[in-house]
Image (cartoon, rainbow, N blue to C red; front, side, top):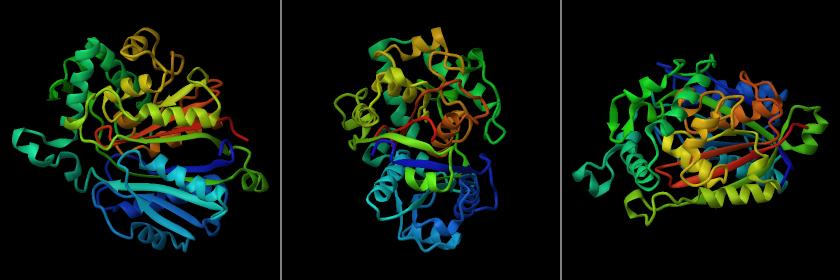
Length: 376
């Protein structure tokens, strides 16, 4: 699979609040932008892969999106793996292209979790709700506390993720939250679920995003010289809920990254820019360590010492991530990774070499990894 399929176009809406619009409407806008970016007609699309909306799960969702786009794809489907689903869908689309089942695929997502229903994020967690087990934040608070107990990090080691990501997001006109954050403001922020501070937690946003996939051969036929090849893909499923795990700090992200690096034929040291799923700050530190980009327990201290900005140790979430650009689950990271590799990102890293992107669902239940290379 290495380098056989490319991302030929990307598109998104503005992120934040879209009152009066529905999730399919946002997908249509993002898809139109991606089709224009790819320089193709929508009639070329014979595969449509859509992540199920968090705010309103729906049967035959892929067919509803196809109808709204005026498509009759050979393959049209929806999938849910939580926040890992977008890279998961890219994986399945790439496999279908390589197998010759389809030629050109649209992978997309849209939701109105901000102005619509946010119930999925604050729902009770089974029988344990009677002792306070409510919300996505509760599970991550347990993981955050486990990280603190094992490695004894300073609070600033979590804070640097929020501060640097918010700085990047402040430069992004499409971002939901364009407000820089100081370390003092982070440290003085209120607790949501202790030890999680407000700025440890990602946004809840409306928005849509889409990417176009095709084979390398097709991209060359169309003269798409800025198409970005997929070098590596990986996935891993933890599945067990937080309170049932033997070790809260070991997840299937390790397996996912190992598979992606093996397919890509590169090592962590070859990565020049990273778009890491930042639903919570502890997720970033743990993923960097699971990916072998930092030693265990040292991602935060390394980030504090060497920086996560454009000229830092590892430029991270350069359009703002989930903490600033959009709380939508993961496609914005993929789009920014493509723009970094094409050289047309707003905050462009010089000579990135390769970009690694993570997606993650649930409370570290599901994980997916994508490695992108230099354009054709």
